[in-house]
Image 1: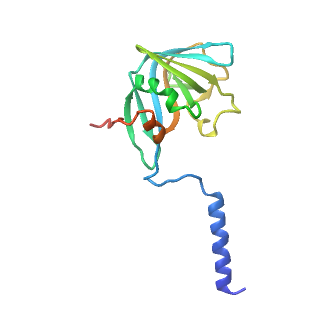
Image 2 (image 1 turned 90 degrees about the vertical axis):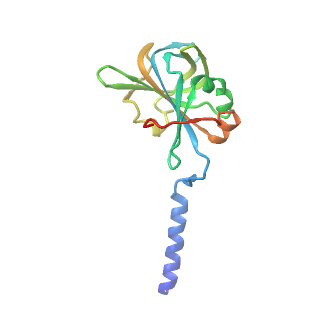
Length: 188
């Protein structure tokens, strides 16, 4: 085989390898980003519904939710928690989101529980969700190192928590009417 023939075969092999093993999706900044959500609360409870789900209640919930996108877009916004609750069924009509509830204790330690959230409601400063606990086998690998040691069963009561909710596409958020995110810059 000639040197030019070997070069062509090598380039084809590299191209096939890169195409086969490259991450799927687009890293193009013009691609529609997915929004993720972060929320904090002073305390909460898990109550067993005895049907495989729990009533997750967050007390003294912040009135706003931080929305953010992953790279390369890195957009941030603040939305009222009521707006998220009012549009929940539209935002997640295709599939309920995963979420990680991270409990912070006074010693600085954190524990977490990974859940699937199917409904959301807000009344005053209380947010409620229907939650299904995801077992270790059901947890996405990308969530395995968030929030310390995961609970095997949910705590009945907890304090000082952060809730990180999986993503929703910009298209779904626009269809649900969440197109007026207020830009957020903590340094202004």
